[in-house]
Length: 167
Image (spheres, one colour):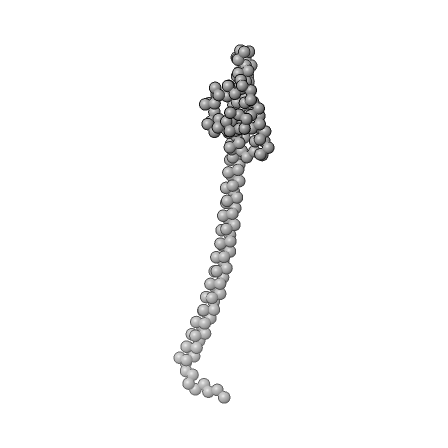
């Protein structure tokens, strides 16, 4: 049926080499597929790491903004307390109303600047703006604001001017 006469040792070695090369290609192919899978997993891990770093960065920024807001608020409260004590101890009675108006204006300016650092609810911002508007309707208060306007930020002065009913 089959004749194996022409098969020689060199032919057998060639066939064995061919089988070895095909086996090598098969193992190389499997190695490449495994490497491809590992690279995909590494890419996914890097994407997750980037997402985690972005989240950590956002959290750090939020914590920093919160700390700034707390420090700014403490500074406002302590400054106001010192001004009130100074007013009670050293300001003569006829000047107390003028001094107190300056404290209130500084409070409003501080709240305005705090709104830049801290995100306040819209209704809180509207309440603060309404307080400013109502205070500015008093002529003495408005005159005192005009005297002290340059001591506060230009943005605060512009904000007060833009409030409806204050001009």
